[in-house]
Length: 128
Image (cartoon, rainbow, N blue to C red; front, side, top):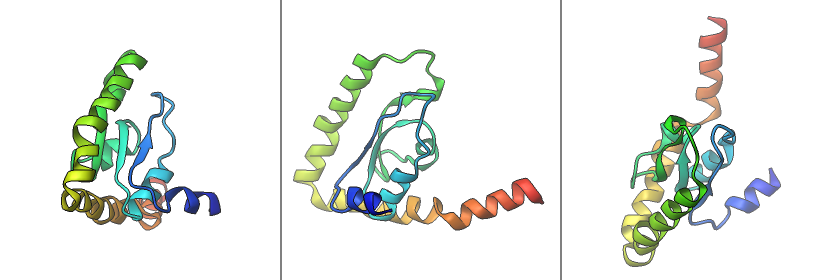
């Protein structure tokens, strides 16, 4: 818990680049969203549900779950392209726009990806 707090404190962007199909559980990105930190991630795992391009954060490339092979050079190029052409210019030149993405990360992802919903889904799907 302490390490998670330190990692999200003061972060401006949450970068998540798992290698499909080995995606992480997503709890760090969800915690970042609750703290107003937009994500930049491959479209895998929870980010498939939480991603709204330019609203809650940004995706690197296309849906990795649909790709048959992974090309690390292509993925790296797509990551840098998104940073250089979209995110960094918005962060430095359109602070109000970036702040809106931060607000949407809280409002949309923070309100949806939470323990209450998770427990409710488990109860309904597993026990009822």
